[in-house]
Length: 305
Image 1 (tube, one colour):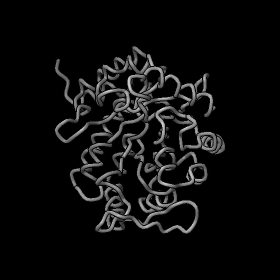
Image 2 (cartoon, helix red, strand yellow):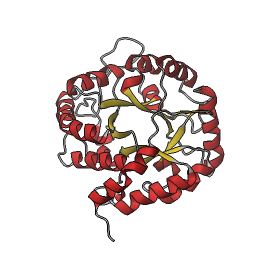
Image 3 (spheres, one colour):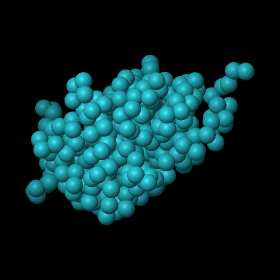
Image 4 (cartoon, one colour):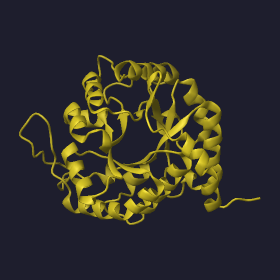
């Protein structure tokens, strides 16, 4: 018998709920996942065995790569993820609406909200706890002048850029409409962007829902000039849905050539009791994926215990 989308949602609900990771901790320490775009081509469930081989426990799955290619709308693709995930012991920590929203942003394009709904539905099917909403590229919420320059409003050692007020208001309005969908699916909406913790917390307050949280990226925040450890403490456990781990200066975490102070970030995560997923956003050095990813997993286990 052929199964339509609604029937499939019902049939996988029980299975998916069993795969949800309510905590990123196991007997061996924190659970470590990876973005599917670092594992190989996005939206490909056949790469699940590769994740297992790299000592990973989870995958952040992209909902799609363009309006013409959104594989997770297909029930057979989601079913394949669930089958292989169960076979290889891989969970799906989150679903990302990244590359699509960076080109067709929530701050200006009405159709972008549909991709978020797609991501919420896919996350519910796969047992993921949140969806990543990206605000980079065309979706950047920092105000730029005619020459593409931004204005740093801070006089201190850490930066804080002027916001695109109209764009932020538009995002707040869209999120308010998406919150009921998030509540129905039990899946959080995670904001990953170029803003400070204070600016993100203000957006969350304006939306007025605990279903809107922050997808914190230690590599991005370090690179943009923010105080990562202080931000993690300020945001707190309940408002961080997931953490990306990467270093713009090195594909190997903890390298002497890196710019991220992972030790201080880990101390802050321990202080707030963070117990959710750590997701690698690094493929390692060229042609050394397995070696470097295993090393990165080991680094996270040792540093973020």
